[in-house]
Image (cartoon, rainbow, N blue to C red; front, side, top):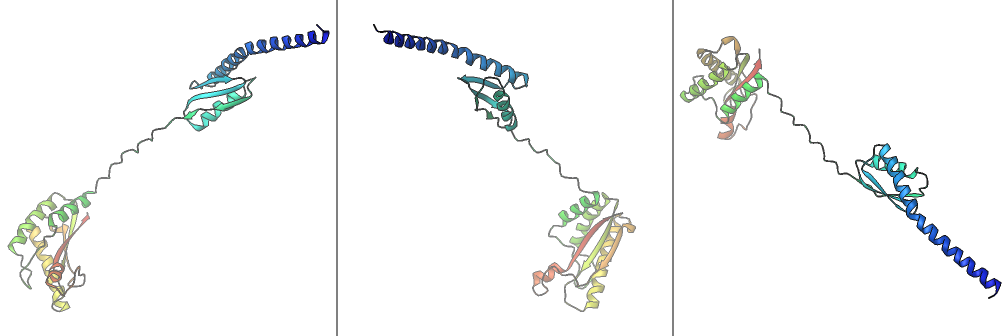
Length: 232
């Protein structure tokens, strides 16, 4: 056998020996990288990230509480000696939205609460009078009895009674009639025990219509008594 062939075989054998020696050390190197990376993460208070090694590449897996903490874990792993690259596979935890606190609607003021009771009781009903007169109809006195009871439960309110007419007749007559009807209502409420100093009457005549003054329905809507409550 020639010396050249013997030398060649020797080199091949040496190469194979080195290959198997290096291959045998790879698991040891990977284990060391994983152990040192895990220690670095634990020291930084990051127990939710786990490391695996593929050669000198680290793979981080787990669930990070936030994007910032994911990036922090990747930075710590990249600084471990012997690590070449970091494959950061950490996922971001889904954060449940914080429910909005229940905000209770503010309680209405006593005056607003009393006004609401007046409005709800009246609804589409109206205080009615005899034609061209300030004399209350019987049904309207029954309604005023209920309004007096509501007013009695709201002692710290002033009650303005506003009278309105339709546009038939002269302005002077309508103004007088609306004032007389408003005063008729305040007088009735006072007779039911409501302090007269809490009551005021004002007539607007036909100056503030809320409907047309042509149709029967529009005329009827414009003939009305309104109650406006205010604080003492």
